[in-house]
Length: 617
Image (cartoon, rainbow, N blue to C red; front, side, top):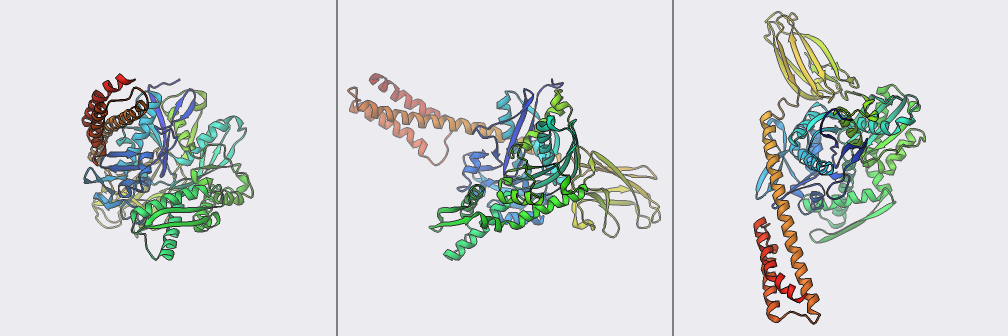
């Protein structure tokens, strides 16, 4: 039922957790990782022993906060001087510096030296881990993938995500909006129950981003996005941060000490706050309890669900305002919405559900799709379709998405001339004619912006291109500017001088050439090197564990046999104890020894102990 050979995967690359699925046996399979979990922390840690991704990274964050990277999604595609990014940098325990072309670079200590990574590289490491889990599950190499992004990601963030996929060795078939992907998941499962066109509001509140999307689904399976709204900087992490700020102040008030500069203390507090947030979704109060939080001081304090809601009331209120915006843009009212569908882990928060239910005048909220897996589920369905799966469940899928933010160019006086309005369906192509505003100009510059503000400078600058023009009096040289947005939501721009037909074009990325071909090639090389290092470290860990297990096994046998009539002689015990001590010395060293050292120690221990034990069994 495939026209192409190979398997494609759908990936939800989340701020806090990520998820991957594959289409098999006419259905979506969400893949468990090597820890047995169907979602994986979007977290990467660097240690002197190697690199950890996922649960391994998250589990050691409190001990290694400055070298454990999370929230890469809040960095990707942004400029270093971005206001929100600067606010985040104050909260993160890891270091972020200004790189070339204003690209933020993450600095970590790895194997005794400082290394710099872009958000694309960190994201690619998470993608590689998901890709490997998929390959292990299906037993073949994976090349093609659909990757999701928040609906409100701008052009540069989309391109950066696509670059991350490329660095991970993936052919990114399409970048798709997360709520649209959830709509696919909902539409596929509910297809047989849809007898008429229905209007569905997807409310997607995750770990770091918030999207609301209003879609119409018809009985044939066509999904038409009517409007989107959202905030790329609103989610569970912000709720955690509000709690952290509160407890920092409480600690200061109670113990007259400021822990805001203690990165390990803040990491431990943030971990405790995240757990408390989850607990408060099922009970009305809980306790933050941390031993030796700062300078030997233990910290214990209760927090109620009501207090948590108070701390985050502005965030919750903004979610409802976004719903209002989405309805207004779609020119619909509350009564026209047939279903309100919850997606994203943060929709488990009772207050969020209550506010949403109250807004829709008591309407029951749909929980028919898995809040953590729906985004990856929908992306997997689209991946199957794009790779030629011809089964009826998928082949009839038609998807019409929209542009989240308006796109235009800066004109004389600094205002924004909009060529493509927000919520326009994609793919889309629009043109506009612009003239020289000064006598005898030989070049017409075009600065491209994305956003809703009337003045260009107040929006997000995407890039610039210049078109050579004949030097004529003001208003006589004309350039036709073409904006072309593909199915990924990525913009291509070009300008044609109408007198000479000279053409100049760019694929717009943030601050022009955000990542050059050379940058990406270097990242690909680095990714391969890290993969080899990871494989070598896994071999080390495997043989180290084997050595630890054998030492434990020998000690157990000595104890067990020693209590029988077949007990060891004093000389035999001495020989084995010396061998065990020698092997244990390698394990107790602070550095991670090499594979050969561990293997040699294991072989020597077996050579000494095995014959002696065999005589007494």
